[in-house]
Length: 380
Image (cartoon, rainbow, N blue to C red; front, side, top):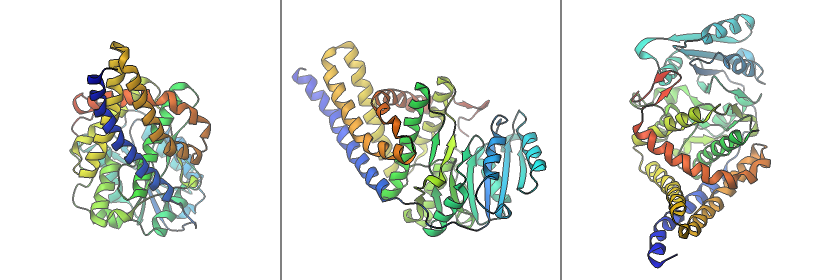
């Protein structure tokens, strides 16, 4: 590599140092986390926003019915977000078949629809102080309710994020998704352990209804196309302090969701997630997102340069190795926690692919029109 090329390589190398520091900080945070010690026994309201989920809603409700928790203290509220399939009919049929479970269906129609409006509507109808939210395409460990609620109460928290993993993870595409998704969940968990809320997943949240009602108006930020979970967490942290935001590092709190069935669906999902980043107001959050994007962008750029000129191949290899070494300790620890340690060797081939599509989705998410479940969600 020529001297001028070496000078250019110093820029991504310096970016990698910031990334390594960030991941070490997050890994230390992950190591500080703990789960629940005792089972909770309080009334809970579970909110499920659903749109066109006829293939999964019954399975989701069945997993809640099988929870190791007093059914008399469980209230389930399904908010149907203008579904165009049989989702509401299936919810009603499940309610009739299982009268022992308090299950209510709310229907959203017209301009007031959307997941954020659905969650707000559910919160307005909830009867319990402890709120849990999940997604209609999820299933849950039998201890999910008890563990999430226990962490919320034991830690004297106002908001708790829980672990979520994908399954199945058998094909190459599914394993790639599993590793990438796990890295996001682990990073969000470790960041909470380190004292700076970064991200969470609406498939597994617990919070206090009274805390939500104390937040400023529109804590969900209705002007953003996604982020009902992250923006609520950030509002909670700003109002009550970062110490009141926790993560349940406990296998009994695990929630399972499905990988994307195809590459286009996967990319649109990632674009939707990335699209909210430009609405961040938190300086630390912006800086963290910038460091991650710069690292992935550097790897992608060096790979492209290596295709044109093989002199760049060593630089690409060095930067990729640094990223693998930075990511592996956290990800391997999370895989062990999730009972999927067998996938640890897949980290090596997954890393460059994740870098490439993270850059593509991150850039496209800021400019491209985004549709989700038959609805254009850009800008709202």
